[in-house]
Length: 146
Image (cartoon, rainbow, N blue to C red):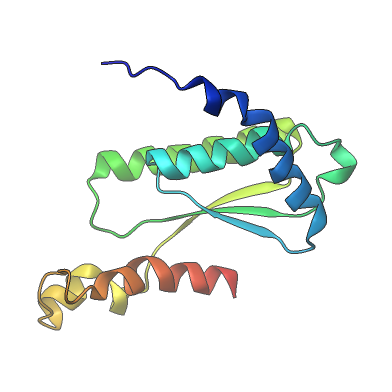
């Protein structure tokens, strides 16, 4: 089923892309973009990619890091798809002259889902006890950034 595209959103794309370029030029900090392969992170990454590739090469100096965290609980098909996406991003960034590198991250052994669930006897994550997000996603990202 195809949903109709709202024209007002499409008409705002140039404005959104200019805001991305302006922010990129304005602040000296590297960018870190989280990528899961889902619709939200893919859209965010594409908006940034398309906006920044329009900058002159001499303005594409600030590094952009795309990070994807392998939680070690996804199916092999999903893991392979994400790893392929990261590889293709790195190849395309080189071809297009973007200062962008994509990275696969993963938790340390003691923070993995199965060590905590089976080894430590943690209950399965639930709304009252979400122990997995910090260990599986946030900590690997922080180790990369810091």
